[in-house]
Image 1: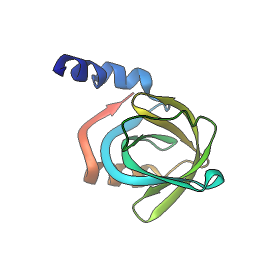
Image 2: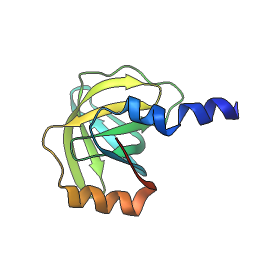
Image 3: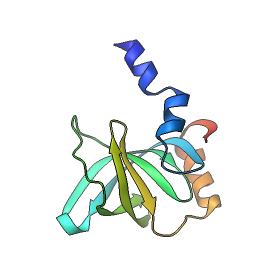
Length: 119
């Protein structure tokens, strides 16, 4: 069981699964809203970059919600985007407008898991 977890969250697998060019690993407990479905999902952002994020819903099973528009809460900021893929790590979200690099750096420094960039 432990070997499966190590493989699932290995840096190489995280890099391959990323939907954005450069992201920072983090663990920011938050939620996303799917306005068209009138649905709010709690979970955590596992990767954050200027153009997108990986959000893992706090549920055992994930439904494929690819294509759905979302609002991702990043502390006091609501970031509109779209789910572009769903895999076992969570929802890969691309933001409608890029985030400021300074904001991404600040959030990941405070909620970061590892200072290493995921490329």
